[in-house]
Image (cartoon, rainbow, N blue to C red):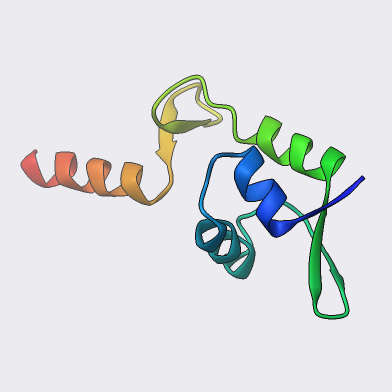
Length: 86
């Protein structure tokens, strides 16, 4: 079923402007543009939400030598800060 921006914003408990910003930055759920209207498919929103599930505060990437390194801007800042202390 196709849903409006407002319906999806209410469903995911975020503001309409937050959802619009996420769409503009490419970080939101996949959407359809039909004329001047933006629509979201329930299945696409469900899949997007499933990809957002986290099991820890930071995402980590396993390197070939079986060590782990943080991924992402916040994690990069923490790593840089720790390296400067050394």
